[in-house]
Length: 341
Image (cartoon, rainbow, N blue to C red; front, top):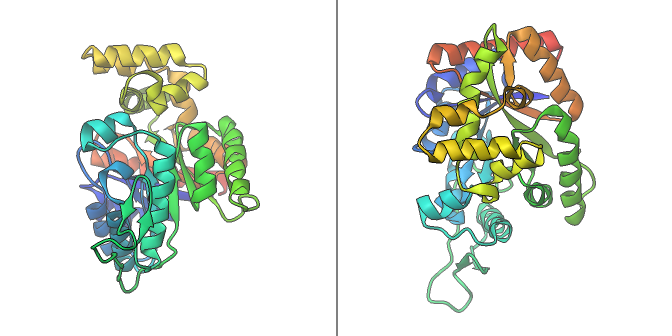
């Protein structure tokens, strides 16, 4: 099992080489509330030589598929072939409320988006007769776009972030890897089955060449309950992005038997009580989906994820200060050695 580390936009330049020296194989930058990821990934690429890099993730509604391919190719070139493109469809609030892009038929939109990205990366003229992305149709007045980025791989890997069952199947069908979140070790197997369903639909056999990547919050501290507090805030933000089951994370908690807790989180958050929303996230859930406590406790969880079939575990350090986040990355690396992985 590979170990990955998420970097914040303002710390990527100095955290990436630290992670590389600690033995992490992958560095990721997320995209969310206020910052985009490409600039920070470029900074990380400039300060490392071995560390693989990935967007974790680029939001599909925020970029056209051609621009996404241009950005991915550029990052692959400047990193000397170390970039993996991670994509996520986001949700209705992000898509329509933030970017003004319709969220109807998200699975069909994602499938078509990846088709255009792959076509663009291949270097072929981009002519696509799609429902969502009708680009330079034959006979139209515009010449199709053709990507030319020397040093970029035309087949660089694409991972798809997915939470809902149908979207996980889609990841298996159309992507080279799956990026999961809020998934405890005992729920990995059901997602592997969904990924395999998608792979069979695409005429592929098994998951031997498929990356099962889980994003896992982490806080290294002596007391696991104290370590859980920033993770509670992190979870509550995701659960509050969009009302009811239209929010993938709300629906995910409901599938795990935590529907009442998800409702309480949303009610408190929408009432202007983010602290109450975080407090409504059960500790037992946080402990299942995060790496909490001292390295020896975290080592047990690393073994569980490895045994469950995860091929890359990407650690998101959620401590409040740079020093504490660095301590978490160091502590998880130590836990990996303790686990013998």
